[in-house]
Amino acid sequence: MPSSVISSMHYDSGARTLTMVYRGKRGVYRYYDVSPEEFDAFRAAPSKGTYLNQIFKARHPVYERLSSSHGIHLVEKPSRPAAQSEQGDDSHRKRR
Figure 1: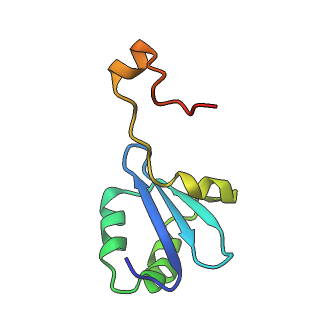
Figure 2: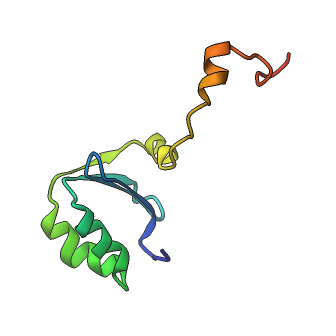
């Protein structure tokens, strides 16, 4: 997804939210009630910036600016295997 405006984006289909990290110091924004079809159309657009400004923003006025620390959570962490969490295995902990 090369774009001169958007650094990265993450779509949560369950919550129907689209989180975008803009390039430069433009910030991180979360847009609400974004349908899967709308997200697919956004991803398929030849120019993400043009689509964002001419189509997407007109359809999605509900958004919020997130603090910069939210940007680091765009990739979900895999959960620990059940066996490790149940047994309390300390082998993965850092030794002091």
